[in-house]
Length: 431
Length: 159
Ligand SMILES: NC(=O)C1=CN([C@@H]2O[C@H](COP(=O)(O)OP(=O)(O)OC[C@H]3O[C@@H](n4cnc5c(N)ncnc54)[C@H](O)[C@@H]3O)[C@@H](O)[C@H]2O)C=CC1
Ligand SMILES: Cc1cc2nc3c(=O)[nH]c(=O)nc-3n(C[C@H](O)[C@H](O)[C@H](O)COP(=O)(O)O)c2cc1C
Ligand code: SF4
Ligand code: FES
Image (cartoon, rainbow over all chains, first blue to last red):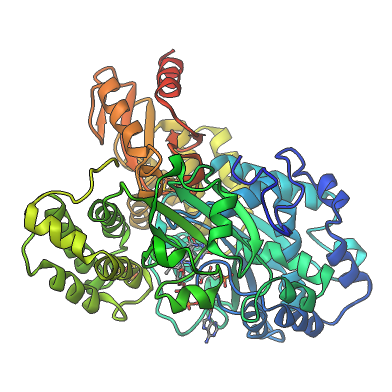
């Protein structure tokens, strides 16, 4: 139920969905597959498709915000062998639950977006890697693929053109790290999901060593809408450095947790209002604005920020995957950080020493502070461990484990200090 | 053969998704299919799948132990995994898990004496807006799990 409401602003991907109208026929009624048809019948040059994307200012919705048009232009279109297109539906970043809604309520937007991407980059085969915990959605997506094949929107000679694209679904099995693109590729190859060194980026060495483009589900799903309205019009919806709408997943202490698709640059206060405000009318204390890897921001500061990449970055955090975790005045920050530290400790793939050992250190230290055994020097030591992890690992999971720690200590230092000194919590703990 | 003909039909369908020389890509799906049928993954079935796919058994083992949702040891008839990560915890995830612990009389990673239930703590399932959420045997996700709904679920599964 999380996106089936009318409290979006200018929605594109989530517009007009009721939970039942996910089938191909419904999508076509909403104007679906028109962009793909136009591209194929008018034989629009691939360069022009990529130019539209560049004009749209669409940035990757998986968390890093890399410009999509630019990424697509890296693909060596004339490469003689096989190339691959991969969709990342492995969303496992705590707080993020938007891609699940896309594949269960509007799967054809994703399929059309991927087909357009394949056309633009001269790719004939693709996979969608779906998070292990969402089996029903995986089956739904398989059904949508069957519909698209039956209607000739996937497969050989799509809509009678000479463009062919085979797309398959792949089901993960419970490893957060497989959301990292190179771990995802290893997993697709039937191996442990351990990240590869970058560079080389997947664009030159990807699935089975072939050039591969990977994008997030929401990124692909936006593509048909961009090509329909034109890149400039899409860009105009958002802010200069952040085109279009973005789906924000709000969880935590709000009245109506859920997915809200709104223009980038919308004030946070407006988003909170759409989500029904604070639960039980309590006071806002802290917000993690971009998934559990993003540093926490105090409620006060957050209330004056806009939801776009630059505004959130200026405040010392990141927009990430758009997962907004809201905490009220009754929440203990030590306890919150403890749960997140445990998560990163559990999910480290163990390849790099700073991450494997460091996440364990972070977890054990926060654990001892929470349980009344903290020492005065612990806060500085936590920061120093974070320093020793960040930037010294193969993938960004190490950073993701370190950043929340720093953010918490920076913004809520007195609360951690109180814990250490008094051996108990500053606020009554409810979680 | 430990696995049924039907299971192999499903595995073949997965293998067909990949280039002919990349059968190993189907190993994760094959393990999931085997687990659905047997409840867990005994070493013999990993060997059988290794032979069928054409990869070393040790590589199958590595995959089975790397990913959290594979059962490399026997579990109860119903494996219940409750998400207790922070976004869910803020909306009753931990409380739901504690309620189940009491109701079933077991801790995390334990199985009830009658072999019916195994309880596990899970990480984010990508459904935080529906907290508390839990998963039964990796496939069935249950949302907004109030104590009443937890009672009803346990009753239903016991039958
Ligand atoms: N959605 C989710 O569930 C989660 C999202 N994240 C997000 O992931 C982000 C980190 O992701 P990474 O992939 O490590 O970021 P990254 O900055 O390395 O890459 C971003 C994208 O741009 C491409 N790219 C960057 N430079 C390139 C170049 N020179 N040539 C070709 N391609 C290039 C990469 O291949 C990748 O697809 C974090 O900022 C975090 O917000 C983290 C955890 C979970
Ligand atoms: C630990 C880790 C986990 C990640 N998990 C995801 C994920 O679940 N979904 C996703 O789209 N990107 C995830 N990413 C980012 C991907 O590596 C990659 O940047 C993204 O899929 C590219 O797509 P985009 O450009 O469309 O955002 C993760 C990165 C890291 C470091
Ligand atoms: S940073 Fe952590 S998760 Fe990433 S490759 Fe290194 S050990 Fe694995
Ligand atoms: S934190 Fe529980 S489903 Fe995301």
